[in-house]
Length: 354
Image (cartoon, rainbow, N blue to C red):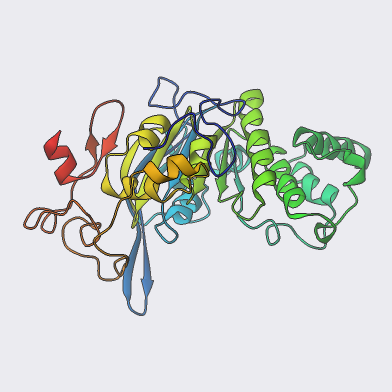
């Protein structure tokens, strides 16, 4: 297993969490954003594709929930439903306990301000014909938060300083093509913070950045969580990034649109129980050669991901699972059940052994 004090490929030590790391778990703080049995099915010429199936998640103020899984597993679709950018075909998305589909105009406006989205690609998420100031103040003008150009400029400068893009005056009049990738993503973070959100949904927001820039941005996001009490739904395919950013939060592992394991980040990373989670942890690059030689390697039965239009019977993971038991894993889909230690797990074999 991964040593919690060992350096990761991100160059950080999760035993020393990023600033602002808040306690995860169910807690007593009511969630700002909840998914309840949330599903999304896409109709294609080849048939219906269940991109997300029966997901249950809570995002609480000042806490971080990392959603981890392979590309194409449904993470971004889940994030888009949580942000109200796509409607679920089943289940609900709740904002302070109210179904998004039932919100009136005023409540929906409040939701739009309170839940902000940071896209993966900073090259595509910023309008190339808007200056940085125009990008940051568009929402402020729309919601009447600033009056006049001078006030808008001061607000934009304050936002850039908050995300460590200084001197702010050097960047306000620049266009996206005049910025580096890391600078662009900081502008995207500042744009999200302009609305003083309760929740930020970060969809692979560091995956296109160099490692050194990635660390800096993660530290900035962690500090914002501490200073502003912002909750994060952090989407990533990289368990090393999840380990660094969510060490005091929770990790939910997704496979083919379903949560297969969820719990406190240290437990998920250092003691993965679901065979898919164990495979993900095994695949994390270990820079220490001594640890790399002794690290457990999980060998899957197969490398191919099942066709989402023709999912296997029983557990979706059983064609690849090293713990596969014939007549059990291939006949009934395992439910996600409590497995002790604030952890949930969907595996016939592991739950049966426990």
